[in-house]
Image 1 (cartoon, helix red, strand yellow):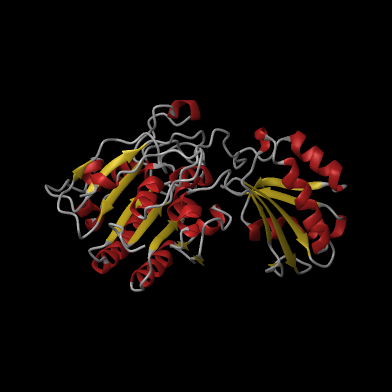
Image 2 (tube, one colour; image 1 turned 60 degrees about the horizontal axis):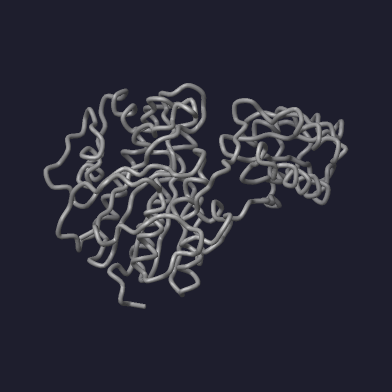
Amino acid sequence: MGKQKYNRIFIIVVDSLGVGALNDAPDYGDANTDTLGHISQNVGEFKIPNLQKLGIANLHGLKQVAPVSRPMGYYTKLNEASTGKDTMTGHWEMMGLHITKPFRTFTETGFPEELLEELSRRTGRVIIGNKSASGTEILDELAEEEIAAGHMIVYTSADSVLQICGNEETFGLEELYRCCEIAREITMKDEWKVGRVIARPYVGRRRGEFKRTSNRHDYALKPYGRTALNALKDAGFDVISVGKIFDIFDGEGITESNKSKSSVHGMEQTIEIAKRDFEGLCFVNLVDFDALWGHRRNVQGYADELERFDEKLGELLNLLKEDDLLIITADHGNDPTHTGTDHTREKVPFLAYSPAMRDNGELEEAQTFAVIGATVADNFGVEMPENTIGSSLLDQLV
């Protein structure tokens, strides 16, 4: 250890910041989507001076932001090799996995009848809900019925999840966990495969008094193989996660986890981590872009969130040392001008900067997000695990 080019690498995933449709986007109903471009076209002001310095407008023409003659680092677009357009697939591919069977989301349709029939039959419960909702809304709407009739609330969200609510007194935790284990088994089928099943226990007897408890339990899928994160951790490097990263990888290859209250908070945590000494990777997911603005098709909210991010990015840039590398990227698109509420199948940005860089400019467009994990592994001199994809860009970052 200690011989590597960079001592610390920071990867920041601006969740859902796509930069234009992938070639196969029409197969997903996402022709002509462009998260970043359409945000720029549909708002008045758009001030992102730090992203501008890093070359964001060189990478993608923007209405309000001019390209710069000398970007601080390197930039390109990454294509997704895997099938799908969800969070887990995007992040797992970044770290070397090639996912050919996508996770399913049921946001707009609810779960299929056949799935619910099997779940009802095997749990012995009548299912109510079956739609995308926030946890507090669904309890206010249906918990009284669940308590009175002994039914079972099943619902989803914008992510690839199946969630079951159970009142701790009337439904009972053991029974809730039993039902979730059955749901996890059922949703392993390719056509129903969800990233996680979540037990959502609550207390209270009437509307307005319901509260979720800390006895939540997640039945997540682990990554389908070892990733760059496992390789780093096994070699004794730090792998510090911020935001949803720990959940996305179900803890695999993570040495320290930091939960974030918001994307601004996630950047504040990253800034604090940058003030510490560590050797390895700090891997950050900032989810608000996606969860609060993309899915809700709120263009102005997304633009404002990018401005708040840019401000914090300026603080982080000031803390970076000669032997630090910063990579900014995304995991999929979520064009807030598109129809529906789902993610969009897009290319993602790759912006790389280190104070040690002597040169700058555009790199060749990459055919997989996995160039990121391969670059990190190459830097720290660890072998990428078997059956991973991606080749390193380290030698081009000069």
